[in-house]
Length: 173
Image (cartoon, rainbow, N blue to C red):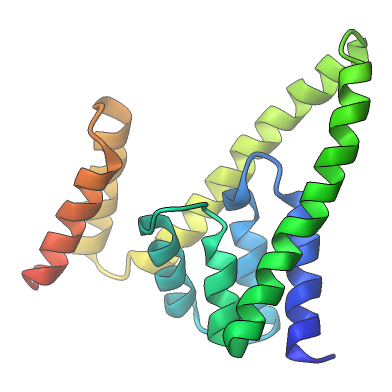
């Protein structure tokens, strides 16, 4: 299978699993890109994830970055088509059916069941990224501090990103 076909297959499958946003498929994305295909290491994947999160735009920018890293511009285009097209088509179909059954009891049950699964997948994504990023005690301390600040204050995430960038620029981490 060619690299472009593999990228399309991986991201098309992930597209259909991304309930609650792209971050819920990060563990499987990392497994496919790092462990299954060996296109990059954990540190490179984590760096691409950080870059995608820091840049303005959708969270799924990581797909384009992975595609670019693996196969240049064609890889970026194929990866983005794979992550966007299947979910968009499924969403268009589902919205028309979903609205028709707005009073059905099973609809509420489905929505209630998806919420904890999504939260669990986001937690798994966070755990995977932390494991790749926190390679020493100073980085782990920064991660812990950001978690505490995020949960206890209304500090905008850009301030935390700027603080991390400043610590890196000063050579403190």
